[in-house]
Length: 151
Image 1: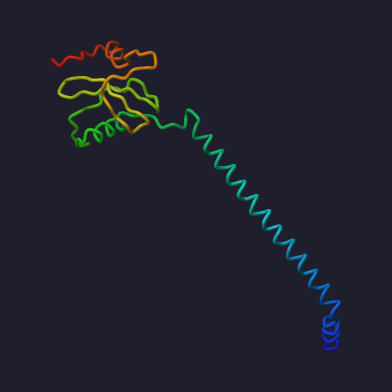
Image 2 (image 1 turned 60 degrees about the horizontal axis):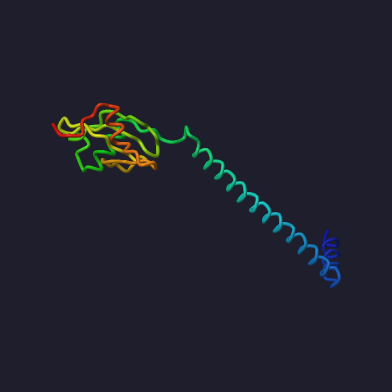
């Protein structure tokens, strides 16, 4: 057995064998590194594709959150800085439950008003006009028989 090891060591000590061994190991190492780089690039591309797929699914109409009476009340109470447990301004009805622009009816001291919730977090009362100049607030008040003047 010692003879075999000595024969292998003697062959490896030859400069020509050493050079060929270095070239072979360098080529093998290069192939391994190239394979790892391809794997890394593939994984990054796959991850980006999955992210785009998730983003497209989030844009589907059913994926948007819907406004509930509880969430509308929380938004109104937060905007008016009222106690959420005992609010002065109460949400009576959700008229249009669009995730971008929701229309609600609020009541404070037995006075009903039309209010708007934009993007599920901004709240405001007042007149809202469409691009043709039509007052949407007055139209909804007329439609739901809400008197603008204070009794």
